[in-house]
Length: 296
Picture 1 (cartoon, rainbow, N blue to C red):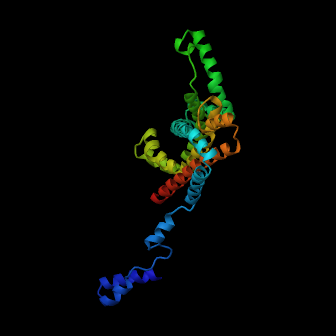
Picture 2 (spheres, helix red, strand yellow; picture 1 turned 180 degrees about the vertical axis):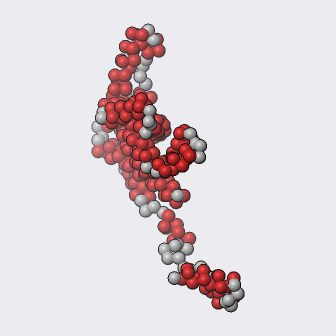
């Protein structure tokens, strides 16, 4: 083996059994196959080719706006304020569902029967109800329920409760996706070998310290791909909030179509804008996954 010969030469050099010139040649680093040395090749190796699809979608949107300003430029201007609502709704719901999913995942793995039962009941019920039905419930039915409870128990805050579209939409998305995120956290926590938990406990760590310093840091790396997929799915499903009067991009597209009766260009532009956002999000998630994999 070349590596064995190099080690043997180093040992013999140290003992004075080989000439210096010969040993220097034998101790030169061996060429590494598959390792990129050129800066240009290194850039190409780290460049995700799927970014080309993102750029292509952006270029197509720009071409449509510039080449056919009527109606594509009008459509883009009309729905542009809905883009910010879509992004805000998605980001806030994602952050909240991470915390809710973490609590649900810890509950599902808890040895406490009450915590485990509540978390399991939450996951099973919420996963069995379509997201659209949940959004309609929180916006239309929940205010009536809250007002009835307020009148019965004489709670003024509940008696005068009025649902705001955006908070109710975020609440519905968070509760629905929090159930799926709970299962992701549960699987991630269970993927950590029990030997590491037992070793941490033998060092005097409490259950909370073991979970915080040993289990969760490793579980986060395991669940990163499915969490990224959930974010992309959440971004697409945020279009459903248009049914509860949230003026997101889909709602603005409906309003433009209702005012102008322009159907195909309207939904083509809306679809392309969603495509750009989802493709961009997917590439960011893939980049984060590669960074985490490299650090491991």
